[in-house]
Image (cartoon, rainbow, N blue to C red; front, side):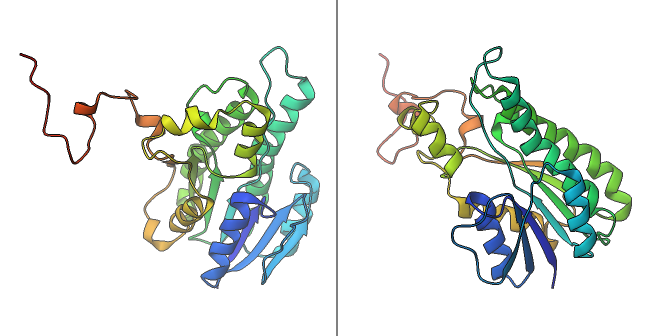
Length: 253
């Protein structure tokens, strides 16, 4: 039985990931500053400020060896560069990047060979999303951390990877819809799958990356976005769209 620690386990993607590992028989520990509204059975929760490196050191020293660390915790605050309060910038970077580094730093003391660390980055690490400078910078920082740690920890056979979700049905996405920073109709039209992703789809990817099926994958960032970031031309003419009734390019004569 593996010991799996999931940060940000009290809600959203973190909750679903904790459930995925639990359902496959792992011993799951959830770390979060929030108290889960609907705690998962057989998951142990520890309430902790994940940006507090001293508190995290104390927690990990009490856990013993951890096989899998899922760094899922994060927040988002929307504001333009030059207008967003400095305090918000610091909060976002600390919650998304610093917390993941602190947790990873502490777990390494006892993580055995074959262990796995996964960071929850975002397509925002590569794409410019107005109003999300702090969030994008923090998520891009996680990708840099992923690559460096993967190389440093390869001799210990500890794998380090990242997941870059697109727009998933979570409280963060709903927050953007509510505050007007995300136009859901505009967005869905630009996703080739014509829908948002589900948290279950991210949880399955997380479980795969932590499994023996991914034993030769390290230092990578897996994008899960329904094709959004690879789409070069949106709203292509019908004759360039894959639909059963199409028989090819219309006669131009």
